[in-house]
Length: 117
Length: 115
Image 1 (tube, one colour):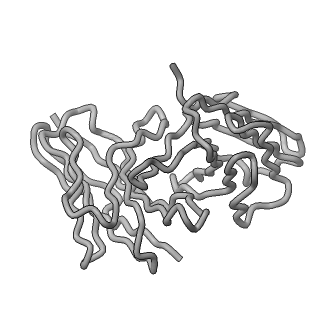
Image 2 (cartoon, one colour):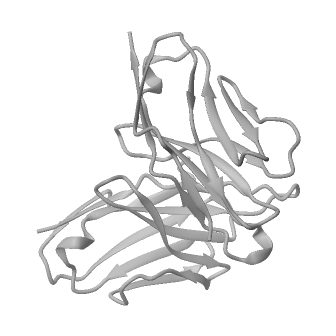
């Protein structure tokens, strides 16, 4: 079974600084996907970034980058130049290979990020 | 254009009632999901449908019954609602891309409160 662990229930960061949100995972699959989602106080789930297990380069999307260390089974999210609007709950998630047919996401418990002015 | 939509957004009802939540996606995806987010914000898969066929049915009480009339719609019917059913229910959809990447896109959620 897959497992996602987010050990930081809450994080604070000063505006304009960078912050790293930790995520470790466990799986027996050789092929898998890793995702980060943002959930602001309004409640919607916003897709941020994706990393495939066979991707050699770390994924980047604007101010978001995913620090993927396969041997350590970690997929940390780095947000550069934090903005007040980044204050939200952040979820790390993992998918199984599409060939298994069981493509649902397994989520971590989330990290609540608060950006301070 | 809303990619994944859910109705209603809020649902307040009495214990014992039956209610339905509707989901529609206009992304042309072949797979749709229902997730439940509990009061501690933990998200867990409930059901998954691929081309109208039930693929995943996690350990969900049989009071919950999903129905997929077509590829773009996945509804969730709940019988005999209980207090513990109070949660946010998210619909999502996805499709495997050419490179094997598959991203799930979520609806806005339905906040269910059972009194």
